[in-house]
Length: 319
Image (cartoon, rainbow, N blue to C red; front, side, top):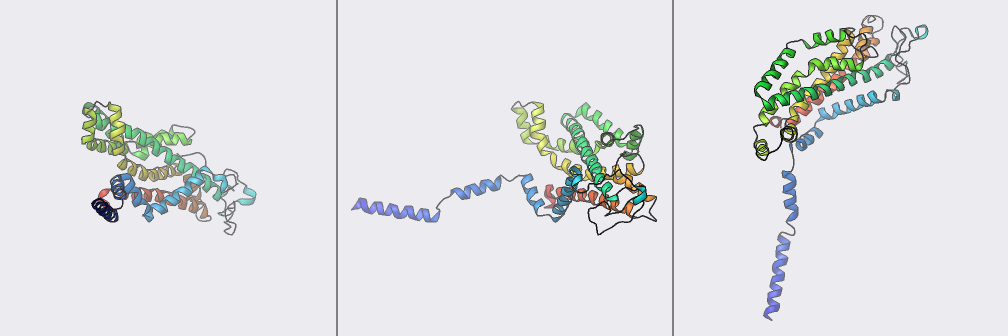
């Protein structure tokens, strides 16, 4: 009888414990999951709730589809002109997505087809220049900020020299020396003067990050310099660089359009070239300049909005 009573009491106690806390593991797992959230995870959650990010991301996605698959949107040749049939022909808004939809220019070329293929040129220059200046400027800024001393002084003075040259003027001088200005030539000219801002942002972020305890711990454990720079410092300095690069992408697209408008940009279809051609016919054919201008404004605004949304998500002070 005593053993039976003791066993029953033990069973009651165990049932009580199970009823009070049936499984403590889910609570521990939830706490671990909550602690595992990083800056990038929190930033992504904020971006998903931002209408500015959603609108800009949709616009940029459409632009990227047009860039990679322009034939999906028009079958017309942007360089083909028929003066006998289409000289300054007015838009036919009822024929959506046809070559006649947005009218024709003074050379009988479809404004809609040139606008579609101009998207490929402008977006390619913007992304190519942004990638080039981010890699080159980021590397220069990281080396300058990490090593300091004489290396920092030399690279900082070199950056000051490039800062002293007007960006647009310097690019025009370089492009003027090339008889044929392809996409790669324009990207190279823009990148040659555009890396300085990224370099300064990266340098400041590296100087702040290299004072962290985990960097000192990695040095004490004997980690090599490349490992410290690219495994410990770089991931923690990307946030401001990404923000600046995203906003600069729209600026590079508008700069390419400005150069094309002045006759120093791309030789093929480009929004700047079409705006320049439409300026001479603005009194009789406003549509030649209107629609490329709308595309340019929309594209630049989309990338600036995206950069603003990313900045707000990555800046803890704005939460």
